[in-house]
Length: 226
Image 1 (cartoon, rainbow, N blue to C red):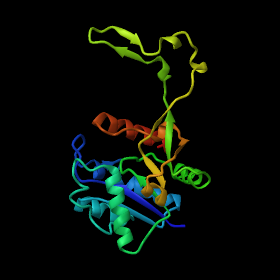
Image 2 (image 1 turned 60 degrees about the vertical axis):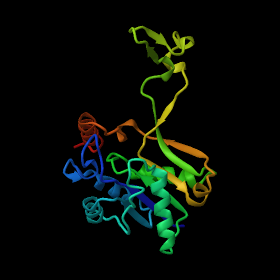
Image 3 (image 1 turned 90 degrees about the vertical axis):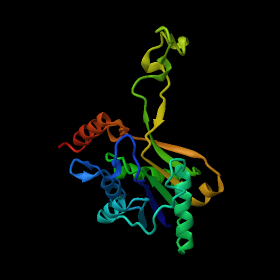
Image 4 (image 1 turned 60 degrees about the horizontal axis):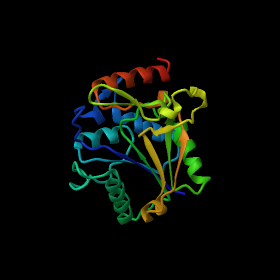
């Protein structure tokens, strides 16, 4: 069985310039995703899909391959992640390499644990899911969410749960936005059945602003007891 790790890392980043290679606690952000993928021991190939020469050099320095550069079409603001993944799989096939499974692993996920990558892969293999990714429970019950009207009026979205105890409400989860495992053949055919694994909230953090960046550093230190 052959597994491919694809780390999309485009050069353009508007909210945090050069985010993928910006130093995060002493190393480029991208390095953490590469190292977690390596530590999992699951991949025959770990590659970075990029259009940027500096990102390519950082990727190689930390042990990933960059066998080809991303095309202008998939490096545009309008390209989707699916476009990038398909391009990578097609180019590998042209080189005579095909993979049974692949994992899309984002470059800005420094807290991801290799054990979670392994757990998601095991669930993928032991089920009829064609995609498995990590989720985390909402920290506050979404059933008590409020709508804010333009005049400042607060309206309960689900008033029927106003008097319910938190522990009696159903648990709900959201995508961590860190990595996604796929069975290659099924994904390319469009036959998608999604499964998930629950991970600890300390292993995730959206990193879109400088405040997010600082929070991610705090979480990383907490997670690694530094």
